[in-house]
Length: 250
Ligand code: PGA
Image 1 (tube, rainbow, N blue to C red):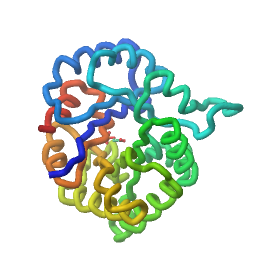
Image 2 (image 1 turned 180 degrees about the vertical axis):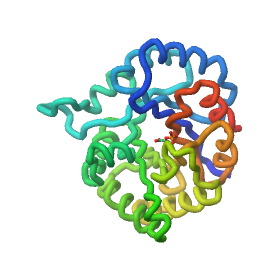
Image 3 (image 1 turned 135 degrees about the horizontal axis):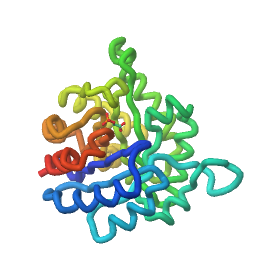
Image 4 (image 1 turned 60 degrees about the vertical axis):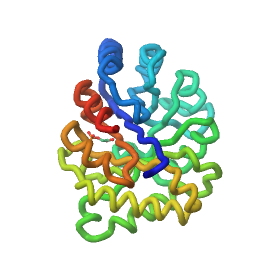
């Protein structure tokens, strides 16, 4: 039995509104029965304050979808860790595949973001994952090895980092990795973390699965020994389904 407490993180991506956020939280809070996991919602930045208010007196934490690595300055359009903290943020998703693909976030940038996030006492949720081509050509492990090495280079206090394993071919596609596939790959990631940090740290770090996780497949994934929770996209906007995923932890 692992000592790691599972966590379910909802990534709303560029979706939602103030009215939606308020209604979502009030419904979510009445439906959650499982206390077995941590829960967080990562809305667009414009909804952080609204959600912070709505999440008061709940066990649900607030997260952001990205951050800039500098503290302040002439970086039009960007948001710093200090600004996120002021909104009550606890977790920051970093290196999501959509940021890598559409906004050219590189491993080097992501590494700086991980460092700034830890320095601000926030918890990074670092996303890694291979493409379909890499999986089919047997290059999953080399891809993950490089991503982890480059994104985690020189990290001083890795204890609280969360890793999200999100195979690119499973994100938003309705295609999930099988529980065995996800468990095996997450086991590989944990062995890589042991090499980068230490076995002790690797056993502490929570590694999530993400990619088309839903009410139907959540339990079989979350029951696997290496899988410490989920990063949920589409389904995190459907309150009843999101609750089913949360309540699959028991
Ligand atoms: P999905 O997204 O659950 O819609 O596949 C997961 C993610 O992008 O984090």
